[in-house]
Length: 154
Figure 1 (tube, helix red, strand yellow):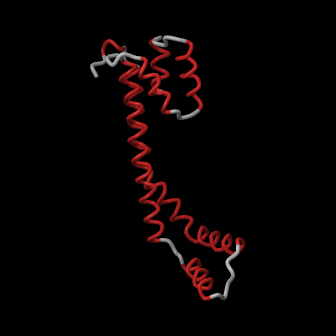
Figure 2 (cartoon, rainbow, N blue to C red):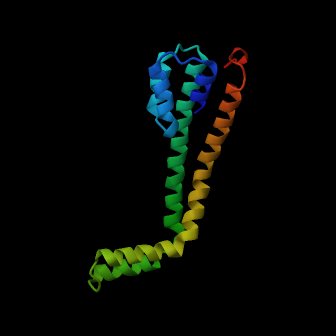
Figure 3 (spheres, helix red, strand yellow):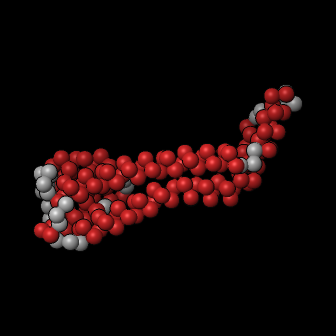
């Protein structure tokens, strides 16, 4: 988004293909498009540096997000109430229950109902660092594109 705004604002769109890439990206995250655009610009230009920052933002945010989801999964599995799931599994192992799709759906729904608050709170808490990181980086990027390119040092 920052790269699109920057390129449109400073009129560094060199071809109709560049315009197509930028406008195609308006409705989705197509990180590979930034690699294509960055390749077209000189390494010393503002657009090249901004594209590199956006690519870095995407990858760092992704790593933080995946780590947060992994940690959330560990916390949920450690602190969640697995009583009904364990009872169902034990009855299947002993042969008193035949595992079918309906019973699996029911025990899964029971688990979700029992642990809903834990699942939601741990997920939000664990992905919050990624969202804060992205928000701060986007704020920095917006402040850079609002500054005339001649005054930007890095």
